[in-house]
Length: 181
Ligand SMILES: [Zn+2]
Image 1 (cartoon, rainbow, N blue to C red):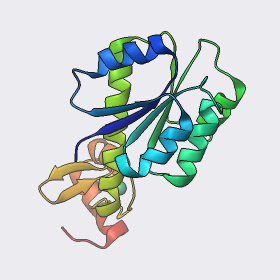
Image 2: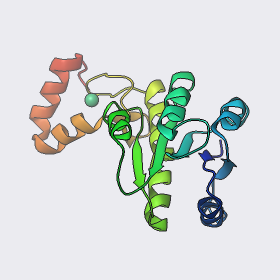
Image 3: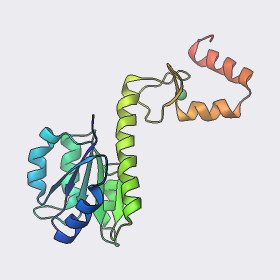
Image 4: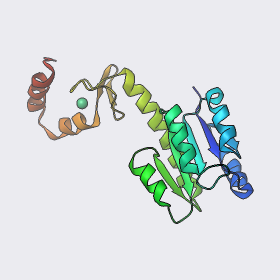
């Protein structure tokens, strides 16, 4: 599935800059001037990532992303804001409703990297839903790492694996999972 991002921003200069930046990228982008229009199109587009400016018409960016999060909780939400980050943006970020706060003016490479990280995060979460850690058996961890073809470890267990001598790790694994392998 191709990666898609929905952007809400009505400042012509910002929109122009983002278009120029995104044109050479491997993902599809959809830019809306109005949050309402974006909300109407999200089902059809089914983007993995949503980026909104904080200052947009009709409602604040953080409010728009809150609505998106309620209806499409799996989307990764990012906000563009001025140098001074408003209190409610801080709040939404610490509650985990927004994954990234990008300050304007942004650095092109950094913004692209953050968007790619957001896509990657989305993919990891989807992936983790179907696979589980072979060591602790936990499902839904976004930090699963592929060890062999059909073997996965979560970051926590991998850290332990690297830390402990193999024989201790094996007996710990047997103790936790009852798995002799
Ligand atoms: Zn684990």
